[in-house]
Image: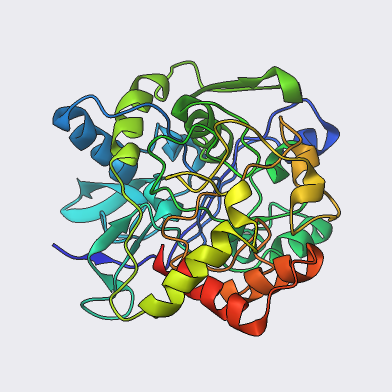
Amino acid sequence: MQDAGSRGPGFARAFPKRTGFARRVAGPISWALAFVGIAGALVACGSSDDDDKVEQGQRIFRFDTFGDEAKWTDTLLKLDAVVGVKGTVETVNGSDVLTKVGVTCALCHSTVDDSFAPGIGKRLDGWPNRDLDPGAILALSPFFDAATKAKLNAWGKGKYDPRFSIDGLSKPVVIQPAYGLAGIHKITFTGDGDEIAYWNRYVAVTQMGGLGSFTEPRLNLSVTNGSVDLVSSKLPALQAYQLSLAAPAAPAGSFDPAAAARGQQVFAGAGGCAACHSGALFTDANAMLHPPSDSMAEPETPSYASRSATKLYRSSPLKGIWQHAPYFHDGSAATLEDVVATYNTRRSLGLSAQQSADLVQYLKSL
């Protein structure tokens, strides 16, 4: 069965009531729009329990809205026609009527391989959907004032600010992949949580509008939607499925093997990459986080790290890096060539043109 690509409807957030910004925008968002994604990378730690749990987690990832229909408006979509949108169709007076619409994890963290036609093909769970422009679509809503719409329109495709609903500041980050997370405990750009429950709960409650609670003392944040919890019981199975999603291997012919072999030596040696992108997971995130000064996107205003619970950054794992351009948390490097050039300049590595080219080929092979 083929899944249609993502091109369609509205979006809602849960705004906590602790700040002036939140009070101004609190309340249900009810409007019909075209399609929009919810960012914030999904988290993982630990290991899958069994195949049944993985299958249950797959259903949750693809189809569970955590009850967020309460925050979504009706829109004319066919049931399961769009990846990440879940509709409830009822027969009214002999006609099919879409009575509820909700969003799922797959909205931002699934796409399709275009094997049937552009935007239509086999589902690729865990792949970041970089075609969505959440900010531009949000800006169509009369719910926001002109100043807020200007911020939203500036986000760009494939970017989302999961802190915007909390503090009212605007510094979007690229949608992260939800694959290749097995064995990695710090799975967001800022490594706020140590397990899947933390960030999945954050996204489900504060961004998707799911029914449940999220509390973060480090941010003086507590959000509760509704009087029932439709989130907590689903987190273990969701984790098991996410942990089963391996990073995609580099396509055959997409890199030069001989150059990649030379580049591996640059990665471990002159490039200094392995100091932080270490071990089989290509990250030291399980052992430490890094100050904002280590980020190639900093200094920035506002600093994304400063708005997080840790105030720090993790080293991003590199498996499947060939797939998810642009790079750095703000997407400021369009290609892997740009990544290497930025490090070479800012870290004064002194890499030759040949070393840089070889290093790029190695990164493309991961």
